[in-house]
Image 1 (cartoon, rainbow, N blue to C red):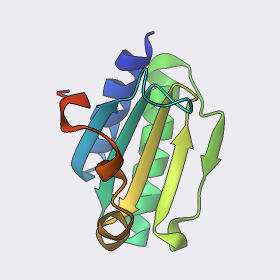
Image 2 (spheres, rainbow, N blue to C red; image 1 turned 180 degrees about the vertical axis):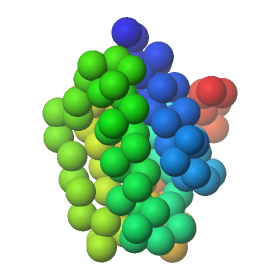
Image 3 (cartoon, one colour; image 1 turned 60 degrees about the vertical axis):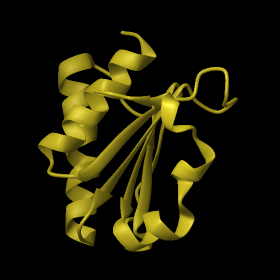
Image 4 (cartoon, one colour; image 1 turned 180 degrees about the horizontal axis):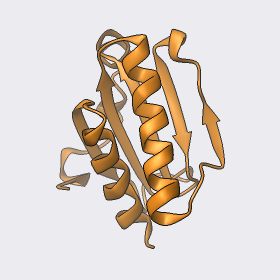
Length: 113
């Protein structure tokens, strides 16, 4: 599985968990940390937990992959699943607006999924 295929699979899993405003960015050649970043919004702490759980479960069941690292602190309103080449950021809307990660990535790097 390529990193782009994994990124799209993660975005679809987040969509199935009803995350909103899902964006996938191709950071190859731009970032030394990861190839793809997914940013999505959860509506509450329980929803954030559910998105993390469902993405983790779907990727494991469908592709046999587990995140190398998972920052599962939903009370912080920002959690991350790190698959090395793909990082999934699940954020509350106010945290996403405040940190505005997407300001660092060019719109032309956004991937349609």
